[in-house]
Length: 183
Image 1 (cartoon, rainbow, N blue to C red):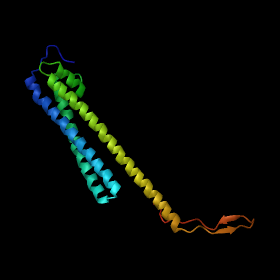
Image 2 (image 1 turned 90 degrees about the horizontal axis):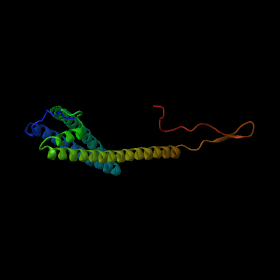
Image 3 (image 1 turned 45 degrees about the vertical axis):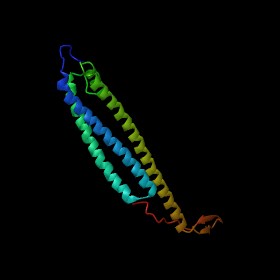
Image 4 (image 1 turned 180 degrees about the vertical axis):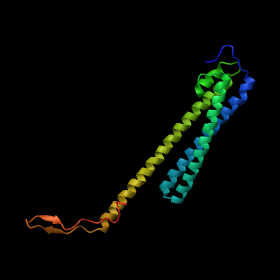
């Protein structure tokens, strides 16, 4: 993991590790914001407020763009710290262990490890909230489809029944749908 002859100075590593820590915090803040936006979308869906839903969706898209920029910054900073530590990989877990191995690096290692855990937990919670919103959308679409079917059934009278030459009953004509299902 670390070269035995290589002993980086904590003074040189501190700003790089702090920048990585800041990026992790920004990423976690973005995930928290996304979580709140998904809550707002669910509420707007329940209220059937299309304008609010569109506005919140735009905010979600903006937050996703911010989060992507934070992710890219985190990866760059992790790569830099990994090179400085001569770490075998740039994963946060490996970087935290490499920091732990140098003098006075224990505190920063613990901070990186805790932030990694918090970020993973927040990502999981946000993903669950997104799935709840997705379920709500699918449920609303299914209800809308069922309502259209009911409306079509009410609008079209039952087809007349005719007797054939053999004396059996048959429908006179096919029912015509209000909704153009072809396109």
